[in-house]
Structures are given as structure tokens and as C-alpha cells.
Length: 178
Image (cartoon, rainbow, N blue to C red; front, side):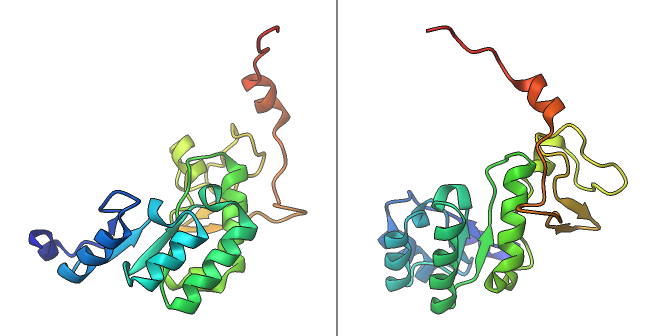
């Protein structure tokens, strides 16, 4: 309650992930928007969260929820319930950022939130503007473009990214002999 005066955007997963009842109770007691992250990795949990009116918004990470196909179901359920959704990332390469950028562009409901967190490749390379200084040392040759605070899905076949063979050779290890 004391934190409400700071105009906090949201409280992400403020209780342990299995405690959906406590998420709902907390939501009724505070004026800070409550967001489920770990509590909403499975479609059944998502339905329980909606049934219990436990959150103001949801956080989706495609790698955690089961990929693009499950993510599409997840976003459709959230939309049917009228719950805004934010995209999160797992701090991956340009390949992760590419498939998430395409998901964000393809799912209109994801546009309900101004803030999306598909910045894995930017975080890894500590580079949040890629037009003036392109990322060249990523596993993807052409990771997503970030310009003036906006991100753009890569163009081209498939995800629009190509494997950077030079980087792959540099990071590949010999492994162990059996």
C-alpha cells in the first residue's frame, strides 16, 4: 500500500508462483497493477488466474509458455478475458528476439501495452540502437532492428535471420569424448 504513491507500472509476480489465491487477494488490497509471470506459464494456470480475477495484466515469455503456437492460444485467451499482455524475454540471441518480434507484430492484442520487453539481443550486446551501430557479433547475422525506441522484426524468409557462421565457429566447443 505504501508504494502506491510512486506510480509503479506493475508488480510482477509479487507472490510465489503457485499462490494464485494470494495474487487475487493482493490485487483486491492494493492500487498497484498486479502482473502474473511464473504463475501463468501453463494454459490451465492462465485459466485459473482469469477465473479468480487475480491479475491486471499478464507477462508472456514464449520460451517458457511452449513456443509460438502455445503463445497464440495464450494471447487469445488473455484477449477474450480482456487482460493486457506484456512480452518478456529470456536474454537470448537474435534468433529469440526475431521470433518474438514476429509474434508481437502478428498478434494484435499484444499492442495493448506500449511497453514490451523483447530486448534479449540488445541486453546481451548492451546495444539499444542498432541502426547507427549494427550488432555484428551475434549468432544471428541480422538480428532485429532497434531504432528510436522501436523494434522491427527482421525481413526475409522464415524468421528473417541468418546463422552467423563466424560467430558459431568462435563459440563452438569440442565437447567431451565418451
